[in-house]
Image (cartoon, rainbow, N blue to C red):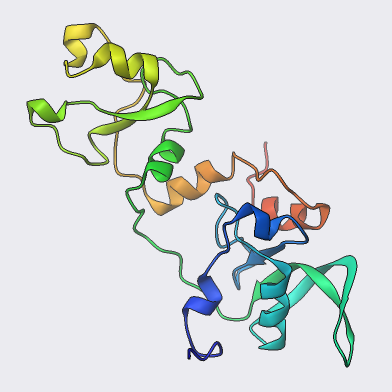
Length: 199
């Protein structure tokens, strides 16, 4: 059995299932008071947040009005917690479908439309194209069908942006522009306090 006090996964694992987060999720901040992740937003269900408090891994910054009771005491459910140990952000961005869509801001890189997205190899695999950050883009189904296995020049299509390998900082910045569907009022100061002010 893993010792939760020493196992590193305990501090960084996010529960991403929406059903687990519907009731009283806690926003998890790194020790520098910034969210560990903006998209998906770093959230724990209330059970994990309370467990982390009991294990002395986090400090509570804000609470819900709701209370859970044990045999010994009543505990208000945390809504914002901050880690006591700094977790160094990952520098490498995993090459996944979700991250590809996030890099391309959830829009087709040929026509700019949103919704019904898939991905397309700019240089088709049948012509030697590889599956990489530099050769795959988000594309809507109509554009994907139109391009098929032809070159951009053959079909008269153009890319909005040249595909590239994104940095973690770039993905972090893009993710902030896509707010989570459930934003509790107690989270807002912690989500946007470090945004640049307009001159």
